[in-house]
Length: 342
Image (cartoon, rainbow, N blue to C red):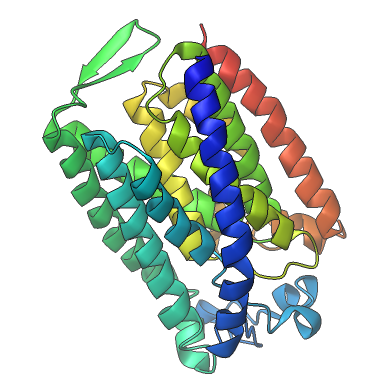
């Protein structure tokens, strides 16, 4: 254990130093290529009105112009440093392939669908519709299916075990189910990236919790990778302290959501995973409830979704929401680690 911990900390130090060097360069390039937020008043689809409330709570008069592709820091450095420093086992290889794929999908989402059409009011309104989100969800599930198939082909993932009491053989049906659930894991991470420091703060805690759990369990394969992710997140969080120097967006949130779900299933820690990441799932379900409620009942459950924006709408300042959500994440992480040790 001491040897893997020492090696992991060395990976952490190297990654932190690389991130410190890379982040200012990235921020400068994002400004140069105009990859910045430009949220404007939009007539929302299906008669929902406008996004005026969102504009107000996000204080867009001050925050518009913030780079919104800072997740490139995560998407680029984690696979690159992993390739340079780690012994790439077949399972790690699949994880890095998935990390790159979903980072690229997040890049397309922000660079093209968000920044590329920020002056197109009709397309912005269409992006708020149920069917647009359903289409994106379908594409992402197919990407997940491809990655899960690659994992299945390694023959290193043959069963999914729960507390050494229940074991499920990995079949094509199970692969499909994991692909669907995995996409919701990615979506939950993406929706968590809504306030300065929120997503990165929570995933920093989640990363530490997984590292502790796997160290105690003696499952060392992913410890170096978790330390590399942590090194990037520490620097990312530094630049996300309000007012954020950049927002992460899909290129950072999507691969993070994928990575922790992937680690959860291959290490037989799926139940602890759901507990440790519970707040991100709460955020996602709040958005789904709002979307379905409006689609079928024409009623809002929250003033605005996801739920952290609801708290903003009722008057909570950003720092209170972020600190309380991170505190909740820390608490359920302790519970998740405990459950994982039963």
